[in-house]
Image (cartoon, helix red, strand yellow):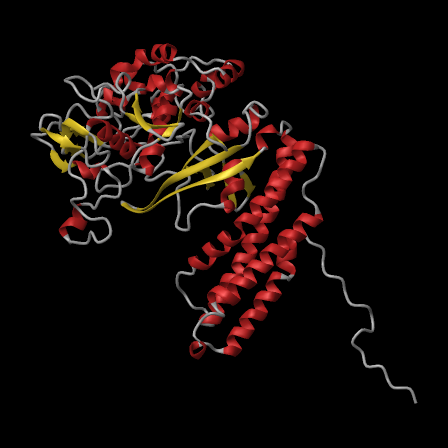
Length: 541
C-alpha cells in the first residue's frame, strides 16, 4: 500500500457523503473536509496533506501561490508533484516503510497491541494496576491499513512521553496546532493551500536545504544512528522538509500476522487487519531551535518553545497571541509561521472571512487529559492591508483582554472568599472557565465591529472610549451575575455566611470599578463629587 497512490484518506463531500481518496484528489472541488472517525485523525490528516504539499509543490513566488489558490491544480499535476517522493510513502513491503523503523522486527522487538497507537489508550502501568477506569482496554483490537497509517502519523506527530527512551515529538508531547481556514466551508483545497508557504521561504527556515538526500527529509529511509550520531538531532543536521515528517518513535507495523474482518475504527471490511506492532525506545531525539510552521511559540529565558493545550480549553483569551502575537514582557508569544506569514504578506489575497482552527491534546506527561479544538473567527481581518491597521486592532484587543483577566481574577477571589474566606487553596478553574464562556459572544461581537471599522476606513481608531466602556460594562455584568446566580447566591442558605458573602460581594464591586480595572481598560478616573457635597448645612436661625 502506497499512501501517495491509493485512496486511504476519508473525506466529506458537499452533499455530506463520505468517500476515501488518494492525495491527487486534494483539489477536487466537491470535497470540503477530511472526515475521519476521530477528531485527532482529522487534525493529523490536515497536517499530512499540508506537509506533503509544502514538501513537493514547486511554488517559487507569491503570484504563483495566489494563482493556485484560485485555480487549483488538477489531479495529474498533483501526481507529478508527489511521484518523486512516492518511495517514502509505502506502508508495507520489504523496503523502507512510511514512518517505520526498518531495523525492527516482530521476533526480536517488544510487541504492542495496535490500540497502543492511539494516544489516549491506557499504558502498561494502567493495565497492570487495573486503573483504566475512563478509557478501557479492549475497545480496539484491529485496524485496516488506512486507519493504521493515520494512527501512526498521529502518534509520531503528537508523540507524548512514553517511558525511558520513548521520545516526544519535534514540538514536544501533544503540541498545539493552529491552521488558517475559510470561515465558511468552501473546498478542502483552499483550506490546505492557505497553510502552504512559498518554497524559497520555507527552505530558508529551520534546516539546511543543502542536505537534499532523501533520508534528511524522510528519516525512516535511514536508521537512527545515521541521522543523529551524537544522540541528538538539531535542525541544522536535516533538510527543512523534515519538520513535517519527524519520527521520534521507533515503530514497525506487524504486517505478517494479519486477519480478515472489519476495522474497529472505520468499520470497513479488510483482508489485512493489523493487530500489533513492534516498538523500541531511543528513537530520534529532537533538540535545538526547531520551529514548526503550524504551531505558535512562547518565549522563556530567550528561548522559543512550542505551545501546548492546557486545562480550561481554548477561547477568545487566546485570540491575540495566536493570531497577531503578544509582545508583553511577561507573556511573549508569536503565532504559527503560516499565520504570521499570511498576516504579513497575504492580506487582501486570502479570499473572504477567515477563521483559526486550533487543536491538540492536553497531556499530563504520558497521559492524555483531554482533546481540545476550537475555531476562532478572524472576520474580515485578511482584507486589512496596512500593518498599522493590524497594530491598532491588536492594541484594542490587548486592552480588552487585560480588562477581562482582571475581572476574572476579581471574580475568582470573591468566590473563594465567599465560600471559604482567608487563603483557601484548591482548583477554582471552573470559575474562570465560566467567566470566559459567559463573555465570549460579547467579545466577538465587539471584535467584529472593530475589524469592520478599520476595514472600511483604515484611518479610523478602533480603540475608542465608548468601546472600552462598553466592554467594562460587559465584564462587570457577567462577573456580578456569575457571583450572584451561579457560584455563591445559589448555594444552600443554611451553609452560607451572610457577612462573609456580603464582604466578598463588596470587594468584587470595588475591584470591578477600581483603579486596577480602570488602568487595564484605560478608563478615566471617576469624577469627584462637588466640593461640599455630604457636609451638614446648619439650619437657619
